[in-house]
Length: 100
Image (cartoon, rainbow, N blue to C red; front, top):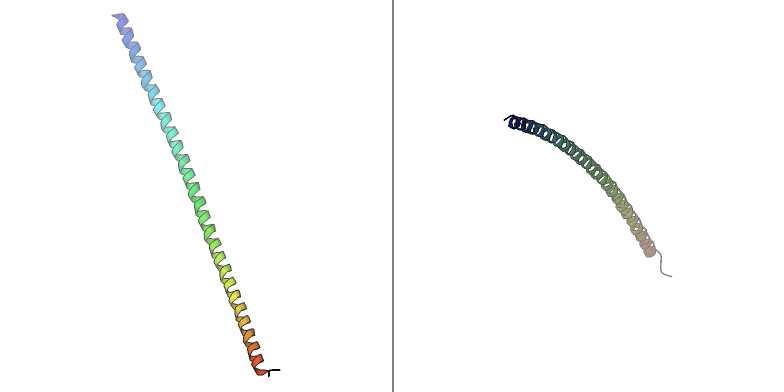
């Protein structure tokens, strides 16, 4: 009977130790999971910040490009108008001069 009591006591201690170890494993796993989620969240925030920065840069570049294109169009139009006016002046001069 004493042997059986000792065995029951050993079994109870073993079960208690197993429960404590399992609780420790669960706690460690929860810590690892929280750390993983925090890392993932930090990566996500950094990614969103980079994307926002890229979008803002792209928008600024597009505005600059639009302004350059508008200036180029105006310059071309002014040049074409100057050429047309010069041609008109030459036509008028040619009509006023008698043929030779």
